[in-house]
Amino acid sequence: MTLTTTSTAPIGVFDSGIGGLTVVAALRRALPGERILYVGDTARVPYGGKSAETVTRYAHEISDLLLGDGASMIVVACNTASALAVPELAQSCPVPMIGVLEPGAAAAVKATRSGRIGVIGTRATIGSDAYGKAIRRLAPDLQVIAESCPLLVPLIEEGLLEDPVTDAVLHRYLDPMLREGVDTLVLGCTHYPLLKPAIQRICGEGVTLVDSAENCALTVAAMRHGTESAVPSAGPDIMLTDPSEGFLREAARQLGIPIGSVTLRRIGS
Amino acid sequence: MTLTTTSTAPIGVFDSGIGGLTVVAALRRALPGERILYVGDTARVPYGGKSAETVTRYAHEISDLLLGDGASMIVVACNTASALAVPELAQSCPVPMIGVLEPGAAAAVKATRSGRIGVIGTRATIGSDAYGKAIRRLAPDLQVIAESCPLLVPLIEEGLLEDPVTDAVLHRYLDPMLREGVDTLVLGCTHYPLLKPAIQRICGEGVTLVDSAENCALTVAAMRHGTESAVPSAGPDIMLTDPSEGFLREAARQLGIPIGSVTLRRIGS
Image (cartoon, rainbow over the protein chains, first blue to last red):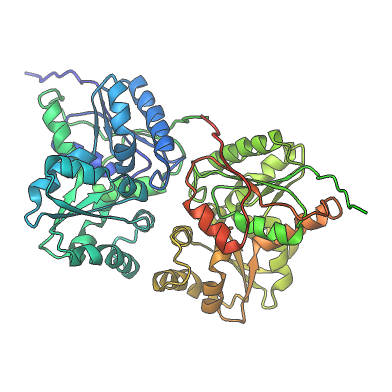
């Protein structure tokens, strides 16, 4: 007997750049049969220092592109866009739209024992206080200590994952919140899971790291359960807005993701 | 007797972001009477890791905007755009278009005694070898040692101008070329003059720093001589593509530039 399956419509995933592949890797572990379309907005990366207005416009354009390509769900694999754009965009999106923020906030609330949660992210994510608001909606008494870490994305994109310079920068960002007794740290940027070993080493084993990519994938899996193909899917099809593939190949290798097609798609002008 | 003057059409200046204000500061010293229109493409900053195709498209859009606002000359105050886009754009531009690259290369050729010139810049600028080509066109026997320094712009934008982390990163980039005997170093990114004291300290007084912003301004001054108003101009009028003014105010303060109007201009989509 041959097992025949009908492939369902793909899950659309997007990020400002390549960092969202950490979400793709988690989705592939949770839902190995799903087909994934990924957009990395490499022509306009990064989003982390830009305004809500601009980030919302970019997220809107990319969602339209993914819907045009048949996406049956949109996963916003970018904390900045999740914080600034998802609340507005999800209301008008004709398919379910999931950001990385709410699942990460829920996991942090579940993990903390001291009641003190640290959050690190881009300047835009931290400035929006979106994690703080999401955590306090679930548990108003918890204390959230947030710190924007604008140097981490450039260090990660340079591949300095185990490096004295990165350690010095991490100490500067993390030591104050460790002194305040956080026992849970939300990695509020999809690049950061690539730094997990260094962050865990600096925080010590007593601090639980909450990987927003991982928790987002589990939420998506709960929503999609039973709809995916029984056949493991090929690698994600990747669309970039600028043909800069260097970090793509390196990140995919580190995350163990096979790459399907890679195409250039112009968005905006 | 009253001195009456007619204000000439403004000089248009643009950069991917705010770094090009170093060129504006130099232009104001060289040509105090000129009116300056500045565009910072903060919605798409940085350009330094992006492709020639994308950077050329962005430069084209911004040039059109400046021409529409009456610019009588366009100064590309961005090394990446100067390296990747100016050779093509200058051919079709109806007014003179000057990049920062050729003036910097000429100054370096003039400064070196050892015949070994170091060049630092973004990944895109260094990858294009535009400085190497410009220097060898002037003096084929000179040796050019180039190094891309992608972490410097983020460090500068964080304000870490005198900081042990920045020093560690600078040593990593500069020590190999210092060991090769460079006696002249081209600061091939308009952000870098803000790091001049730290770079000079690490290189030692024996190395001449070539500030491409300064040399570009002198070239423009030679072309504009006699056309400017006798009345010192007000601060530049600034257009940003994303309303993120934090680094703008800080950079303007450090450079001693008064700011005229600041407006948001959407480009592209």
